Image (cartoon, rainbow, N blue to C red; front, side):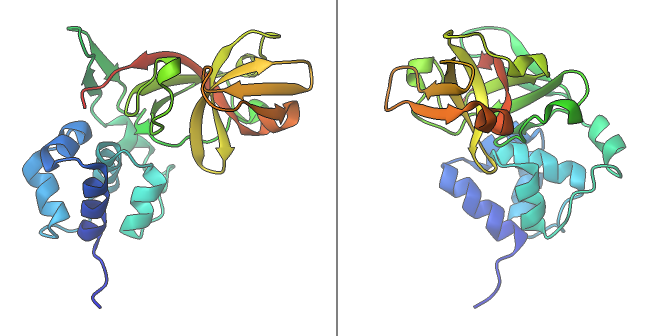
Length: 220
């Protein structure tokens, strides 16, 4: 059996999401013809800057797109390349407003936990929601949420709901409403739906990604 090519792999992901070539190209900020040529193996594996764009268009992580391409992302050598990316524009539903995402802040589907003292200042990330059971929180699958993390953001008010991003499983970022029950335990909920999850403060600190500070309804 012939091995799958890079184009075969990304085509399978696109079809699994039910997306058209034009839709993926729009989210990736590349031309539909270019993306079609990559998918149909009429071009070589794209350069890192375009791999990151395609990852955004397919709603997968940068790590996953590099794995599919058989490459290892070198963030140091590609730092200038990331800065050179064009800002992404998303039309906010029901409004003339456009969400402008900086070129070096790609939309991700999974984020790394925030490690407090290992990061300096404010860390802001853009997360595309992949869950479909957050309607009671006012969030739909495919929405874009802005995640902010600082050392202070880890501290939650006692018995007050806070919308957070957390990695309950490795490399899987989810959105939950968090309640600090006491100084050693938290309750995570889907906003009244399903069974709440109780975790320790230590587990929370280890898996915390950031606070949700804004939500955008993308065209989809």
